[in-house]
Length: 113
Length: 117
Image (tube, rainbow over all chains, first blue to last red; front, side, top):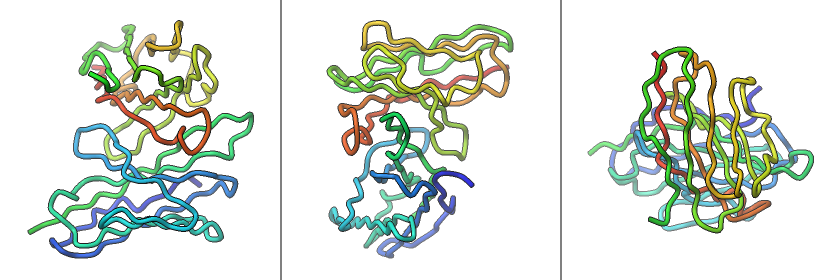
């Protein structure tokens, strides 16, 4: 079983739609969680951290469910510019105090007019 | 510029050749990571430096891969006897923090696209 699993999609949605992605992780000792965005042939960029209480940044809402070991990303009122791959990142819980951000394979989102 | 710089941006080489990829992290970032990314996959961890030392090299696929960071800033990823399966985008990232959550806030370079013919 992979450490971080995501549905690769693509998720094809019209402008204005609400779309949600989930990501599951296998290490129950994981401590920190993030969503990154990666545009085609570009480097990943941090979108938002995921806090235990959930957090919101404009149209984006991230939530953590430790009991079920998954995090989610909700995008409201989708824009054409939201088209990208969304990478789930999990870290912490490794031995020896070494913290390695582990990436999922990403979920592709295509927003169409 | 203030971002992570990687060179070369593209490298085409023949099977069996030696390759070096360079990463210049953001000034002041003590943590440096190398990942590689194949088409349709997420970044795969290779090696992590905290300062000059390799704190975790568990992601290096075999002994053909080696990385150094002699002065705690610029890092070089070295690949010996390249194979076609080494073809990928090699991403370097730096981070301010030693532990979470700051350590999870990675700043990536644009990557070095390696093609082994």
